[in-house]
Amino acid sequence: MGKDSVAWLLLGAAFIGLSAPASAKFVGRVIGLHDGQPVLQAMVTLSMPSGTAGPAAITVFTDDEGRFTFEDAKAAPAPGAGLAADKLGFRQVKGASGAQAGGETTLFLEPTANIASQAPASAWFARAPAGTGRNVTIASCSSCHQTGSPKMRDYAAKIDAVRGGPDGDRRALEEWRKVVRHEAWRTIVKYMRTQHYSVLPIESAMNLNAIDWPTAIDANLNFFTENQGETIAQYLAGNFHGAMDQLSVDDYSLGAPLGVTARTTIREYPFPDDALVRELVPSPADPFLWGADVRRNLLARLDPRTGVTKWYPVDFKGSTGPHTIVPDDTGHLWISMVDNDQFGRFDPKTESWKLWTLRPGNLPTDPSLAGAAIVHDMSIDSRGHLARDQAGRIWVTLVGTNQMGSLHPDSGEVSFYDTNTINGLSPINHLIYSTVLSEDGRYAWYSQVNGHVGCFDTQTNTVTKLVEFTEGTGPRRMMRDNAGRLWVALFGTGQVASIDMRAGRVLRTYDLPDRASAPYAVTWDERRKTVWVATANSDSIYRLDPDSGDVTVYPLPRKMAFLRQIAVHPHTGQLVATYGNYPAGSGPSMGLLIDVGD
View (spheres, rainbow, N blue to C red):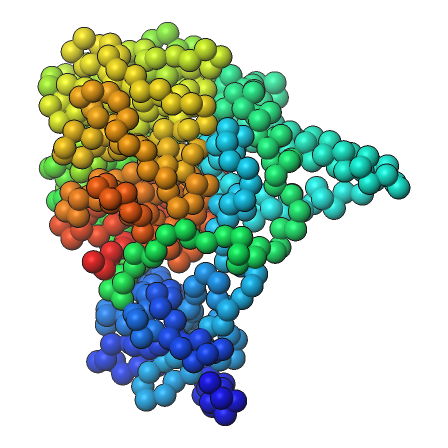
């Protein structure tokens, strides 16, 4: 591209407002200012003015000619709208973005060598040593927030800025710095143990004001052990330091092709900043998306057509902490709650609740996590819908006691059963998590983030199969397909495992492109015969082909895009998700509706 052409583009970019004919699609191009060539698969995000009906932001991707199209007529830019293009390894050129000619908007990018502001949190571990240290660090820290987040990097930079130590002896100074880093990260580990109480709602009686300091930092009442905490401190001290404002484009890549097309569309809907909507699911019986706000004790009903959210308080005198939300085939919503050991069913038609208390009788009355059952996940089928066993019971996992619980909703009968235990781990250290029912309804499979994957026979009430994983692997959220395979997100190692449910053995382990991505959940998509992987650290979604093992990447339009679950809309095939960083406000608070574009 010649100088005259560049000058013309810069001159044409001087306009500030965005405009397009009301009856036309909003179209444009993304071009490299350095070479005049189209930028393929660039992300283009249109942010709506406050008060606009529908999504707050819409993201599309460019085609082979660098063109983008916002199909939705509501996406036509209005006064106050914002438009931005992004692609890893490029930066948008200020003063040369928004040039308009012939009714087409043109955005300009140019290569950048420093991708520190673009790369996801996981990028800071791309060249860190693999192994148990990294796995334990990611599996433990990423349960609540992104590991390698800007706050973590800022803390690491502050440690490096500490002055003192022996002067004139370079080797002695470096050894002194190692000690400083180690003690600094030990302090953070201790602090993070207290923050396990932040997973509970604002009004929870189980808070740091109700317990003493030794109890707050007791590793036996936390999600990771004393030894794991020391492993984390040592690993971060040795490998997470240095210049945190620089990251070379050569030091991190997505590691796999993008799966997006020019038809891929991501719509984002804002929730209040103080909300923590962990999960969002579609209902088979109405047009709404339903979410669980664990922090504010509320159920959310989002209308994706208007963007309006209606909030429903849980019908309970006290804090509940709605956590996991699952629809059934009739359109009822089932919600597990982490506070006061509640489990509920909500009827959207009558807007009424039915609640049950799921609390083992031998659990002590204690203001700390020592007295919490922590009702977590419930039994699901291959669609992510509620599943009952052959006797009509629902199965749940209890994090606080490392148990499986069963509820017969019709009779109200509740029972609790022990699962496998691992030497050196307290009940809560196991972090029992997901549960999936076999197709015949007889077996309830469960995962332990710090342990194994087990198969519980709902007739004999015993664990009949145990698939063992090494420390730090982190089997987390699971889902089965309709061919007898159980799919497991391996949170710590950045992998996905498929398990033969009949034989109780691993069939295959798939490496994800970014092994520090912290895959939180997997979702089976029967329509596409594919596995979707929700990640906590990589600001992206992965699509895994179960036959070839090929993975493609779907980048998300926000930083700190922590995903805990993905649902597939039963009618449209769209993906439904939400950003879920702890604590509230540490990342975007938004729901997502994604047209895959295939």
